[in-house]
Length: 372
Image (cartoon, rainbow, N blue to C red; front, side, top):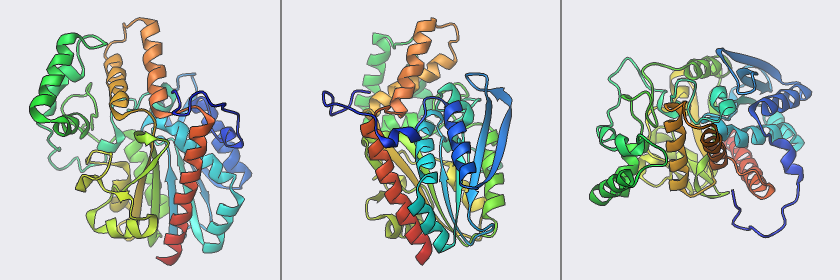
C-alpha cells in the first residue's frame, strides 16, 4: 500500500529478513528458526487441502522452556489467513531475539509459538478458512443455540451483490441503510458474525472447524499445567497505519489485569472502545475451556494497514469471489492482491513499526507473568 511517508526513500532493513512473501516461505523460515533454537516442534497437518503452490498446509508449534511450565506465554499468528505475514514475521523475529529469550528462560516462563492458525487462508490469501469460516467467530459452544445476528439478512444483498464492483443501485441501498440506522449499526450487522449464510461474510460455521479442534488440542497439551497464561494473538487490518491496538478479547473480569500488564490503552470490544467489533467465539476464548485452572490474560495485537472501510470492501470482494469462480482471471488476481495488501504492508517502515510494538508487548507480558 502507499505509505503515509510516500516519496521518502525506503531501504531494505534488517527487520525485513523476518518476513516472507508466501505462506510456504514463512513456514520454512519459522521451522528453520525454531529448530536452530532447539525448540520442541510439532506440526498439525491439514490433510484435506493443499496450499496455493501445492505445498503442505499445517499449523506448526514451537515450544521453548521447561515442559509443563507454570507460567506460559503464547504467541499465535495467521488466525485470519494473510494476517499471518505479519504474525509470522513477529514470531521469527522473537526466535532471533537473544535478549528476550534469555529473559523468558531466567523467569522460568514457557514460550509457545503457534504458527498459522489458519494455514489454508494464509496460503490462498483468504481471511477465512477452507470452509469460509471466520475463526474468530467459530470458537463458541455449538451445543447451545447459535448467536443471532438478525440484521445480517437485510444487509447481505448489497454487501455481497450479484456483480463486483457493486452497481450504483447496490451502493445506493447500502447508503440508505446507513442513513437510516447509522454507521455503527451497519458495521455491527456486517462484522459481528453470522451463522446462517455459509457463503456470506464473517460466517461462524455450524460446528467446530479443523483449526478450532487443532487449537484446543494444542492448548490442552501445552497449557495443562499452567497456572498463568499470557496470550498474544497477532492481527492486522484495523486502526491507523502501523499502530498496534491492544485489544482485550477475554472475559470482562480480566480487563483490569490486562491493563495492569499492558497499559491503560488496552481496549475492550464489549465496552465499545475498540476498533474491533464485539464478536462471539474468538480463538483465544478457547483457553478458558481447555485450561480452566489458569489465570489468563489474552490480547489481540492489531496493526493498522488501510482505512477500515477499504479493508472491509476488499473483504467483501474476496467473499464475493469465492462464490464466483468464473470471474475473469485478471479480476481474480486483482482481488487476491488487494486482499493481501489490506492485511500486509510490504515495506520496511511498516515492518519496523510492527516489530518494535510487538517486542514491547512481549516484554510487558514477560513482566506480567513474572509478577503474577
